[in-house]
Image (cartoon, rainbow, N blue to C red; front, side):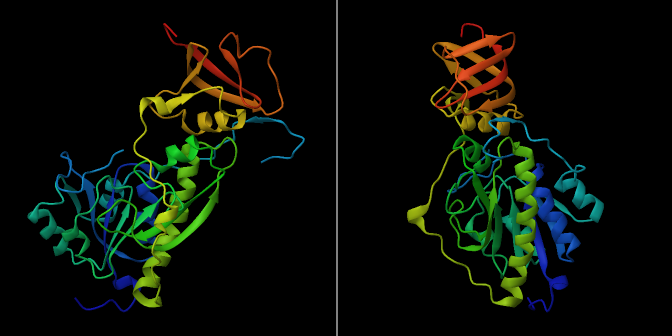
Length: 318
């Protein structure tokens, strides 16, 4: 394959899913003039083989915090719709280890494979197809927070900063050398969707910069420091529970970040269980006499320290 002389000649095969995070990098590649020759989405069957798939502050005197209003731009659609609008072939890959799928990807002659939120690891024969390598956009500041659902763990851990990383892919999960990365603040009350949009937009910009640097600018990958790495699996049911052991700030931010997902968040205190309906606010200096107080549907939970308030529903038997 003759090396591209400018970015308009770089051929890209793009791997993504139907969710929000996959769209901005694809749109940015197209608007930057890259030739996306195919879009690969997961098929109905999971990809078998030795590498299993993976799925899924304000001023000090202001002590009460509420949900941050979210300004959500018009939906970008999904990668399949974007590809259709641009006349780009869409390949549904049910088995990336299959020789015919690998041959079809190779036939698009990619200089690079670009990945954002694809649910499977890419096997070695696929990784070896593009001359520049396969670049993944990952929504954390690697090597911290590797794994299939970094945004969940960003909120679960109570992180005040996270990041986005563009790295070269290898056969392991989120372990390849870093090309570019950027830290991002996680403000109180931000929703997962709003944070994901920020990370996707910044990751899209870094992806384009990384491609230019790899192809024309002498960008050198930097190996990840494995001694600083953390990995988190997909969340278990017990991970979706808020307890009084959390600070009020952390409980609120966990709830505000994730309550829009389909998996319900639960609040458990002294043998009682409540399902979160809506997080309301927190006060780091407030005190309630009892571990919890219920006024109608509003629960005040005594935390360590402070009080977290939320609209809840009582769970039967809890």
